[in-house]
Amino acid sequence: MSEPTTTEVKEVAFFGPTGGCALAALKLALESGCRCSALARRPSHLLSQLSTLPPNILENLTITEGNVQTPTAVLETLRSQTNPSLPRKYIISGIGGAPKFGLNPFRPTLDNPHICQEAAEAVLSGLRELKSGVTEGEWQQPLMAVISSTGLAPGELPFVMKPLYGMLKHPHDDKLKMEGVVATAEEGLLKWVVVRAGLMTDGPAGGAVRAGYAGRVKNGNEKWGDVEGVAVGYRISRGDVGRWLFEEVIGQDGGEWVGKRVCLVY
View: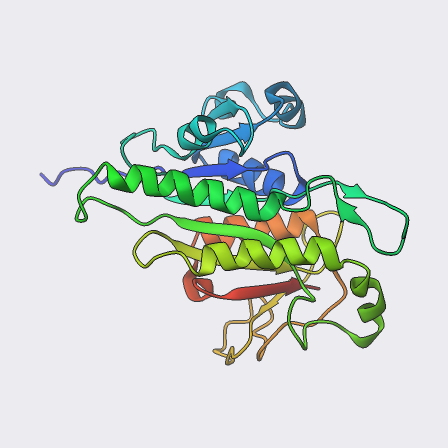
């Protein structure tokens, strides 16, 4: 008699889990049976946002109190529950700063203008520490997705959106630096996906999401619009960004999107 097959339980680490996109992905991951860890400054706040989930589902969530400026907290969030010497297979970072308005109301900055860059550096530092404790053959590269913004490269915005996005220079500078930290990491440390989301709304998930990136060629898969090149549009809900992260990054191991800066819009 053949041995019964076992289904792998996916492990996901979340940074910035109380934000809309990462929170939506976290809920879907928990509901699907993933083992999730989350770094949160206020665990009680995160739990209140997950209060609609049954207690048995929340048993698969481990919350570490702290922030990305605390290396030990970052490391604990990254560690696999199955094998603590390795990282969890998937990492979702939705960390961002709160807008801060100064003398020029048309050029807002952030309460921490380097938060996205610092968060990416903290996660990669944690991965390097874990990797240093195992042999090269034992290391398993995690797949990390970071949430960024459209408008960071030419051709990503409808013309009428350009003045609005021109006001976001400081937050976008931080997003670009975050992308650079992840994309230029040393070979073999991790795989990555950058999600450049359109103007985000709090609307419900379930919209017709289009996904594309520079140089993409149509392949007949209509699920995300089968876009040629960059997907250009106005907006997308945080719920749909979370849904895409869950379905493509966690569900499909990144698929064709690994190593790409993916624009997500309606």
